[in-house]
Structure formats: C-alpha cells, structure tokens
Length: 637
Image 1 (cartoon, one colour):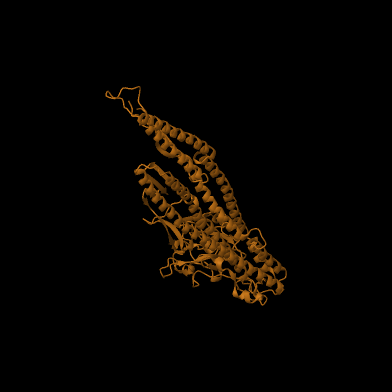
Image 2 (cartoon, one colour):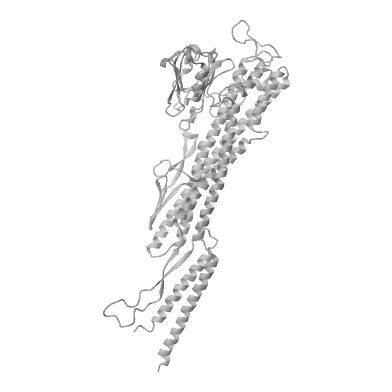
C-alpha cells in the first residue's frame, strides 16, 4: 500500500508545476512588446512511477504516479526564420547605406538647377559664343572672366564637398568597427554566461534572446555566418575568419592606408589581414568610399583638367586686344616642380617618373588620307601591371581609323586632332587596382614605324630606343614638340585648385578672342588681326562643346559630364528601389518569425486561466488530503 502522504506530495508538485507555468505566462505577457523576446513555454512531464516492475514490489493494480514535474522552460523559435531575418537585415542595411550617401552625392551635384555644374558649363560656353560676336567690347570680356570664375569656384566647391563626404564615410567606417567590436565582445560574454547556466541545468532563455538580438544587429554591419551545431559553443564567422567562438573573440581594427590618401583599412587585430566584407553596412560604406565617391572625385578631376587644358590650348594661340599671345586662361599647377616633368612618385626623395598629361604633334595632318606607312604603336594599359596594348596600322588606312582604334582600346591614352590639326595623345585615369597617384600620366608611347615620328611629329625616334616611358626621368626629351605643345600632369585633385590665371584675373584685355594671321608664310598665325576678330573665342566655344577633344572615353566635356550625372542618378534610383524591396522582404520574414516567437496576449490570457484552474485544483487536492489525514490522525479513535 502506498504512503498516506503520497497524495500531499502529488498535490505539492502540481502546485509547483502550475506556479512555474503561471510565472512563465506572466513573463511572456510582460515582454509582449519586446520584439527580440521569444515566448517561452513550460514543458511538463509526469514523474517516474512509484514502483518499477520487479519481483519484490508490492502487490497492487499497476504503477502509482507521483504527479507532474517541469522538465524545461523552452524558447519558441524557428532557426530557419532567424537566419532569413539576419540575411535580409544584411541586404537592407547595405542598400540603405548606399542610398544615404548616393543621395548626398546627388545633392552636391544639385542637378538640375540654375546653380549646378551643368548650368555653369552652359553659361561659360555661352559667354565665349557671345564674345566671338563682340570681341571689342570689354563688357563681354568681363562676362567671360566672371563665368570662368564661377565655373572654377563651383568646381572647387563640388570637389571639397565630395572630398569631405568621403572623409565622413571613412569616419563612419571607423565607428562601425568599434560598434562591431562592442557587439562581438558582448556576444562572447553572453556565451560565457549561457554556458555556465547550462552546466548547472538552467535554461538561460533570456540571455539567449539577448545574444540573438546582438547577432541580428551584427548582421546589419556584415555578412556574418552563424554556426550553432554544438549547443555549448556558438561560432560567428566573418569572411571565412572566426569572429567569435564560444568564449574567444577576434577583434577588428581600422588602420590608416597611405596608398588610399590616409583613409582607413579594416583589418583583423590578431593577424593584420584585411577583413573581408561581402554584404551589410560596412561593405556598402567601403564601396561608397573607395568606388563611388573616389570615382566621382576622379571624374571631376578629369573634367577640370580637360576644360582647363582645352581652353588654354586654344587660348594660347589667340591674341588679346593689345595683340598679346601665348597667355593661359586657366591656371594649372603641375605635379612636377620643373619643366621636364620629373617627379618623385615613390617618395624616396629622388625623382623617378616623368609625369606628362598630354602631348601634341608638330605636323598638321589630314586624318582622312591614307597613311602610306605601316607599323605598330605600343601603349600601356593604366593597370598595376602596365599591360601593353598594340595598335597596328597599315599603309592603306587613314589616321582617323587609327585614332578610333586607340580610343576604343583599353590603353591609358586617348587620341584626337586639335584645332591646328595636330595629333594629340592624352592620358586617362588609372584603373581601380592601380595607384591613384598615377592618374593623368601617359605611361608609354612607342612606334615601330613612322606614324608617331615623321608623320605626326610626336616622338623623336622609332623603336624601343625612341620610346617614351613614364618610369624614367627626363623622358620629355623623347618628344619632338616644344614645351608649349606638352601639358604636364597636374597636381593631385586638380578640381580642388582650378582657377583663372593671374594674367586674366588682372586684365580682361588679355583674353585671346582673336585668331590672328600668318605674316611671312611661316605656317603659324603670328600677328593679331585687331579688336574685331572673334574667331579664337568661337574656336574655344567649339572646342568646349562640339569638337572632339576626348575627355576619357567621351568625345567632349559635355558628353562626359552628362554621363557622370546620369550614372549617379541611375545608381541612386537603383539603391532607392532596392531599399524599398529589401524592407518589404525583411518585414515579411519578421512577421513570419513573430508569428512563431511573438507573444499573443489572447493566447497567454487563455493559458493563464488554464494554469490558474490547474493550480486551484492542485490546492483543492491538498485540502482534501489534509482532511483525510486529519480524520485518520485526530478522529479515528
């Protein structure tokens, strides 16, 4: 016969079990508005029966139960949905960061508006057009100077705003590194507390909720991978490297990068290797800083130097009101401090490079005539390997076809005929994987035949011995052209220093509106016609907008700037659409997850009533058993 007191023990266990269930329900209700909380439920099981089957057990009908027990308090979560939410957070944060800074970049360019770069370019071009009709009027010259000042100011202002925005992105990257380190350290600490709790048999559900919330926040910054196969050890990976493993954490740090204008690289603290990001906010910030903003700044530099150089090239050949000539309209500060273009590129204190932006041949050329010569031009691609590009030409083809092949190749130069029908070769920007300090440098010019030598008058000699190569000093001597036909590479970021020349700022009469005439049959216009001549002003206007002057891969500055703004607009719109799309995807997964782990107040209230009745019933059992024992002990005799 079972003990008389067994009923009290069963009732006591029922009270305890339903009390835990009621407390858990209350905990769920109090966290109903906590989106990171996973509702908990009590797993109840019956106690082991009083007697196990054996030959010496007491005789009785079946085994006697001993009531209920709380086996565990479980979190209700779906690991698959957790992973989907983290993945969606990564994509959403990536596109949000891109959209944030692309929008700010659009605001800087401020297109279309009356004060935008596009409007300034139009007004500058129009001022030269107007001057060509009234070259003798000082008021029109004043307008040209004013428009030139406005354009220069807008160019400088746009550059500095883009440069400052890039610095802001860099600062946000360093802040992001600190935030990631803080989160990973907290995850490590939670891992330690969770492991200790489990070792003593507890269910640290709230600690695991906090850890999952941190993992979701971490996923906003980077494409972390979570491995949780071992219940005692959670591992977080970033780019194949272990970020957190149980109680071990590897931190990140940001270090200045001299090869990237002092901006910060994100590296692992323990081995110094670059951290690899593929998604999330950090990847977006790195792309914005090192791709989008860098590209727009460099394109602005390319636009500034080409507008300045093309204007100066035509302006130097013209004459002012007092028949002054060989005057620059824009001031261009050269990278080299000497007329030979020699420059210390590697920073060791000795010149090691000849920095030339553009060279024009001495000979006037009819581009539509057959060449009558053959050979191979060797150019370099603007990559880290200086990959050679070969342009073959035949006797039966024209110079125009050769120019088209040069411009459509992947070489680091473009070609065109200037206003004097001279062949011009001009440098492009360096490719992404190469040193940005090599921007706007002609890398290599070589001709096995006579096209660049006797035909166009660019190089002194054919073959390897006569080749120009930027990796040597004094290479300017390889050119036939005088120094006025050679443009040296400008200082880094010429858009930030674009300005009118001091001569033009002081005296508008020096603006060369007149073309002049050839005196003495020299083949060169060496004397001005007079105040009524506006042909040179018209030539400058045509060079700025209508003539082929090759700004990068585009025929003129007009096309180049339009493409810059169009690409920026497309990228911004794409980011905006993706933000909306990824937000919708995230909300869908979040709603699905909340349907599993979220607290339903109606359900919890029903559970509370159910557990309350269970508790009351167990209390009634205690009361009945008490009465039974009272009768046996106190009233039986």
